[in-house]
Length: 187
Length: 127
Image (cartoon, rainbow over all chains, first blue to last red; front, side):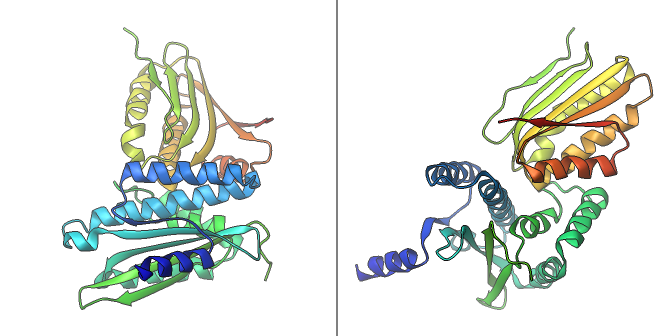
């Protein structure tokens, strides 16, 4: 039973407002968005920040949703779940969003390259990159065809933190941490 | 026979109203479905049909609160369709509405304007 307190205190320490572990379905996505929207309303969050957080949430959750689908046939039931958490920052006005999901080891390289590319670009370069992918990229059945990460980086205004934890020779656990703040420091 | 498209808004999809008999088309609300291609297909199909004998003027109103990246592709394809029918029996005007303090939505409208060769009119909606 002490484990429960352990989980609770760790979440409390990180100011977690909402967390979920399991299969990300379309209905769940709708619910999470509704809960977060009303939470931010009740906290009287600035409309600008609310919109940015909402946009990043949509892209993060839909990333999880689509990628779990992709691996549906690859993994057993256990591995079909993902984790999602959102916490409110203590020192600044803003939020931290965490996601974690399984990824095939063979796909790590391309995901990492995409993240590194997005992280290396300035605000103006991100906009340019977004427009070129929007205008020239192939439209995929699943979604924006690579636009999601660019959009997350644009709305966040900060570098996206990521990690790949190898589980075995087939899969790894892929985590993302995204900051969304109003007063982003200009480097 | 009327080919009017009237889709009510949901928490993830916008209201869509297209009346080919008047050439007026409106999209309003949130566009964040998981499968945007599927959502926009009826509208795209109706536009293909409309392009065969359009009205002299086609007035498009787009007022979005949020859209996801998969919708952004569909919206671009939608504008490209309008672009291809412009000056071929119809004059297309796009009206892009955004809320006063929503710089991101204003920028999104301006972004489409740079890609698409159509007359865009930007409108500020006061809250």
